[in-house]
Amino acid sequence: MDDVSPKIQNQIAQFQQLQQQLQAILGQKYQMEAQLKEMERTIEELNKTTEDSPIYKSVGSLLVKAKDKASVLKEIEDDKESTGVRIKTLERQEKYMRDRYQSLQEQLSKALGVEQKGQEDAG
Image (cartoon, rainbow, N blue to C red):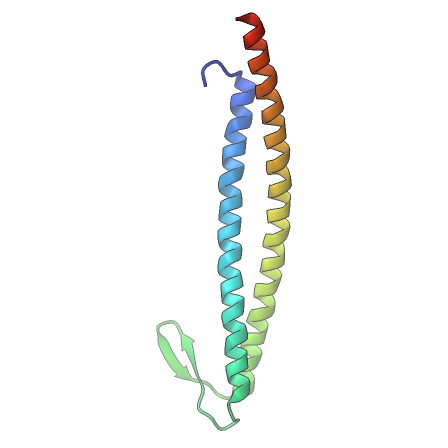
């Protein structure tokens, strides 16, 4: 790496940082999608229950009896909507990062190819 110009070294560092950021975004998106699927399954199961079925919800490390089915459904629907918005945001960030990643990768390939050609001509 000592024979690579400082500009290219900087681009390589940016590329590696971008890789890490993209991995973090993908991890967050994966977690959010899993939460969304869990909420959808929960809503399905709640819809199968009767109005007088006892329903409990998790509050911290406790299970507390819910006031009624409708309030629990509303809460989960609201959380589902928020999670969906967060996933869309992560998808936009992912697309932006992937585009930057590809662009930087192309720049680095060209720069390293030119630099290696220059070294071969000098050597």
